Image (tube, rainbow, N blue to C red):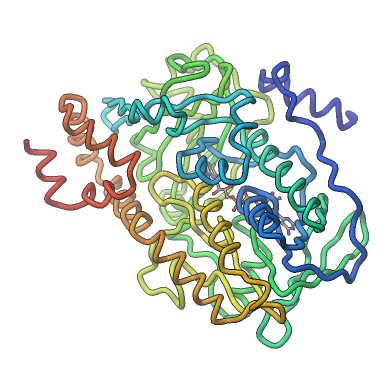
Length: 461
Ligand SMILES: Cc1cc2nc3c(=O)[nH]c(=O)nc-3n(C[C@H](O)[C@H](O)[C@H](O)COP(=O)(O)OP(=O)(O)OC[C@H]3O[C@@H](n4cnc5c(N)ncnc54)[C@H](O)[C@@H]3O)c2cc1C
């Protein structure tokens, strides 16, 4: 058995970024508060959603308890692309400068590949790349550590507490309100209370489970959950080291999902595959096997991976809860994500973009919104059910246009012939490329993208 620092070094060396790291150190979270302590707010989970919520609430002067199951630095299975929406909030939290001091890949374009093998490269607006707003890709181990370290500092400075290696086992509901949590840390059971508990525990968040179970509503809707599998590779042909394209390929056998190739810096590339779970069940596919086939046997990609090497033990599967609108939701869209005493953010609130698979931006956006709605003066005795409804309504008002469009785009991808014609046209037509650039960089422009008239115009003229 390797010691912890030795294990850390092995992982870093295997990602070939080891020599460049200075952020990858353990984070000191200070003393563990006594069981029974009371806080202004408890945050469950320290990913982007939880770190964001804890950071924003600490900036508002609240006494926050942030608890996280893992010990930092920790990995999170992801494509590792951090878009402009995320960067806006990362800047607000004061992490962007630190992030830019660490190694990262600058995304200047996106390559889309069609089922017939044709590809179009869509450049991102030059000024945004110049201003470094277009987007980065970097390992989540690095990105999340920077965010968590920042929130750890902010929470401790504002009189709160942070506990790593703390697994929430129970969410307490008294009457009709969430009142606190019990969890295990170093084998000891600890209990904390607060007028508000934020659920930021990802796709299987215990707070989200407690909210949906309390209302006898489903937590998981397989038609709106995506399975995904990721590996890190080195030596993949055609990938930039520090700046260039990320690639999304719609391949026969993988449709209506996609295969991605996202460089994360220094020749390391995040490679993965994702598909809606109901489609996986229908097609009876295993994503790992599918990815092996794409990399080793598909005529197009096997050449690019001929001299590539997989980073040992980097293969991991995970789930993405989509924010697409439900046809007959039992309650709120995309599902109930708040009640008296609790609000969920990020994946716990099912907010992943159903077309691109991006979820970091919406995790940070919902974290900011939750921190704005909670007001200690008003909610001293408990976050009210009226405010919970206000949060869910505001969240859907803000996100429904883009999530609804993305859902339509996701459905469009199912039509192989349409994708082929569309990508072939885009290769030739500069105006169509410009429209796609707009669509990627501006969520408003996405609105026109899925309209039938726009599609017909683009395909015919
Ligand atoms: C394969 C894949 C590729 C993706 N690619 C992208 C991409 O390129 N760009 C993008 O923007 N998004 C991407 N996403 C989505 C993105 O990863 C998520 O949307 C994002 O991580 C959500 O952040 P979060 O903070 O809500 O949850 P998470 O990042 O999942 O964080 C949840 C945290 O809660 C902790 N936790 C869980 N249970 C407990 C418990 N019981 N007690 C205490 N702590 C707990 C976990 O340890 C974890 O640290 C991808 C997802 C997958 C699976």
